[in-house]
Image 1 (cartoon, one colour):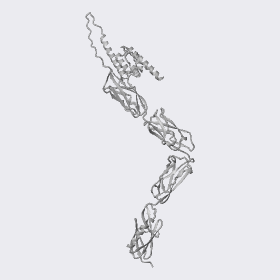
Image 2 (cartoon, one colour):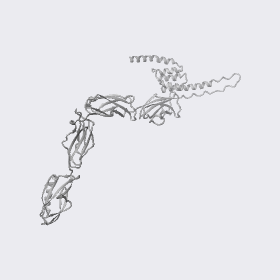
Image 3 (tube, helix red, strand yellow):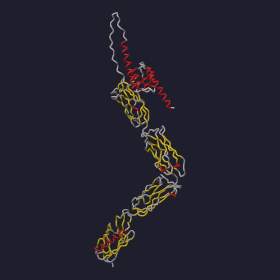
Image 4 (tube, rainbow, N blue to C red):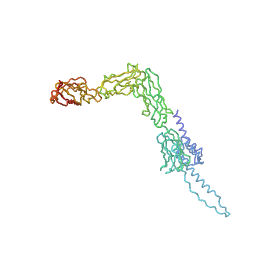
Length: 529
């Protein structure tokens, strides 16, 4: 039906157009004729301009007429023709006034002073925008083109000012200027500002004077590309029991905070196995849209994204809420980890949380504390309901305990802390430290020294690993020593008892070396009895 109507109108236009143009003949165009020609969508503007230049006008356009003609769609070519016609009318009026003087009488009156015919006045320069409306994006650049013509010829070097452009919020701060080129075209380029608004801009002369027809352009500043979105709720929590649909409200803004209207949006899960179905919406005039998420379809927790133009604007978590069940909540067994004092465990501890129904509790905050261990005071469960807890063991060798709590469930993990590498050897006699000092022993009376090793945190280091080294060292000592003879060594987990027998009187330095060294001065005296 629409196609038939279009064919009918086209045929009607084909019949009316030639008749309308032929009816004008060479008579000047009346105002009603010009309005009828411009109002017809079937008559090209170029033909209207040719008719104006050929026939001229039967009226002198007023300022109101110029504005009406522009409103009817008169382009630069038509306006230029009208301006040239108006100039010719002015020239003809001057010539008529000069030739209207009375002739000299035959009674001898003085002959009339001849009046020179004035030269034809130059056609008026007509300025018109190439389009009545322009669009710019907030934060971007606006572009307005204006043509200047004198009759049919383009005018070069005309300085034009876009009055009103100084009032654009965030714009250039002044009325912008442009100069026509060889084709009579001037291009205004200027910042479109930061706010969504409509501006009425008028093209005036360099001095600010109004031009014929008051050429003007309506500038519409539209929002820029969407860059941020406010999502409510910011977190989607699904309880242990299936729930109904949840409405997600979003508001989209550009980088200047302007609402982005008529923007296609997509809400989709980050992972396809979450069970949430993707949805598409278009923002309203305030940049808002509403999505519906069927929570009963959620199979596993994860993130849901809001996207526009192929990019992510925002994301929020969809998690299972509910109370942690003691049966499915606690540390995942790691086989009893151990490590060296003040060192980070090679693997973090894993704490898992589940509901009574077995659903993982995602995004839940687990409280953590440590004894003889350094841990962060909290950890957050991931989409599988697991929280990774990094542990740095304490300085005290022995046991360390990490405790995690969620809701009413509390679980503890025990760790083994081994001493660090030995940094010091200690010699004791009868429980008194003697390394670096001097002791008295009696000849032929055996005595013992206790050897201990200690790490940098004061923990006793097992000496079992030193036994073989000590035996080799002490055997070589027997070869050199004339006062003391090494008898033997007896070790336990943390100490080694070294037994000696003095065989001669005198003084000597006894040095025990096993990677580290400890020395004591020994003086052998006569027996007291």
